Length: 354
Image (cartoon, rainbow, N blue to C red; front, top):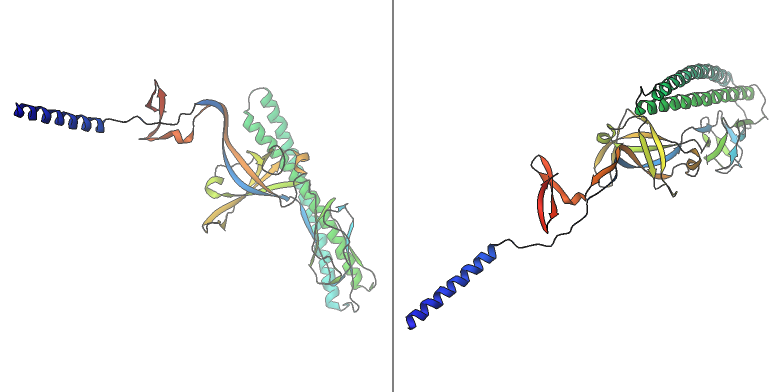
């Protein structure tokens, strides 16, 4: 009897051990986090930090050596074209030797040649602007007839705006060249013996004083920077983009300017992707190849709230769509040559190719 009891106990013990082993190797249910898949707008973009700057800025420099009077204008002061920015009085012993006179005459001739060159640039830019508007009118007619894609129409509009900006820049350059002629003539007049007259340096454009570089009265040499002027309303955004990302950016591409201090993003267009890159060291000490991308803002009134040198975030829109199926990025993973995700179905997570 005892022998049978021992066998039964041994068999029961073996069954229990076997059951524990089987239970140990059975898959255990796990708690998982489930998220709903939805449809909504999706935008693929390249995001980088940028900086706002005045597009057309002019540094007024001393044309001759002398004593610059104290500049009373403060940064931000409005100026008109022709407003006196600074005055330079000749030294007590002005240089009237033949060498200085010949230099002043050469400077005047060079300034006059620069003005003629600027006049030719205005004529060339005006022709390009007329051609750009002609192409835009043709593109609008084709787009109205459904024979032209909206992307090509946007590109034609961007090119027309670019030609207009080039024309405005050429006109500003012509005005600046005219002022350079006036300054050269004034410098030559000082060499001719008008020792007590001060040379007045005027603003080449209407705008505001950006920076005063030489505020106090003191001696200056030729080409000493005195004042920077420009139109703060004519802003552009310069963004340093990695070269491997810049290859996807094209002129006319839409850009969204965010985190500039306002309550809504600003829209802009890529004007230029500069052809030459440069090396910049990242905060981690890694050398990166970057290139400047210039963006024009479409909302000029909102752009007036951004100042010169302000930091902004820019997103270059590569692609966007509506009604796109969306899931958390952590829920999708690579599986072979494709992608897969676990889908909750009937209380179980099932592997599904997506």
